[in-house]
Length: 334
Image (cartoon, rainbow, N blue to C red):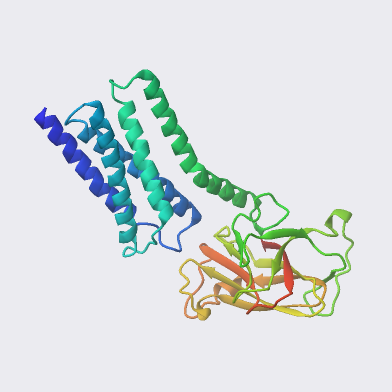
């Protein structure tokens, strides 16, 4: 009995230390969505193991029903304290603290408690089934964000080499706008399609369904760089010759925008990425092409890694109240 108790206490102590070590090293701020959501789900799993082994160790002391409640309270409190400690430690390990992580830690601990009591032979069958049901529901609920991210990655892969298309389901999964959730709207009527050379018009018949295609409507009312950010586009651009961006300016005045592209090792300096200016004529739609060779050599002192592209941004420098532009498509072409 003493040897068994000592073994369980030792294992529980080891699990506590392992939990602190594993969870403290959160993904860095530039981590992918997949690693971030995987880490969040990992909080639940790791703290679930914590709750399971702590309960099993504590239950070795006494088996009175009143002791059960004390074990539950102590284990949940331990999960909460360790959750707070790991979030504080993350400030020194390159991560960021999050109240959501603490909630996931407590949830995981609670699920571990449920599993521990469900595994006890003395637990009535009906209660055991209830505990397993709670555990399954808790795991499924905590896995929803990760499942959604996996779905978005699958949609991203399916539409490649198109990087952004508001007409495709899931085509905006990795797009953010400075004023909140991206808004999709039909392209306003009366917009003329022009060529790459200002002043030239592209005379090509458009099908009725293409006359007013859906586009990402981006208001320029506020923010230092209002526009759209494509976070985590399909990262490997090798084997393609050009980047194509289709934009429209519905306003009565010309509009100047900027575009930037950077890879994962970008150090946030202007000189360490690709930068270009875009000029849109009034009430005009334009297709702009950029050679990937020019993008590759754009960073000062190095070549951009076309196998690890991390971000593409189309923006206006400073707010322009009452103005907006429309982003129709971003794609790679051979």
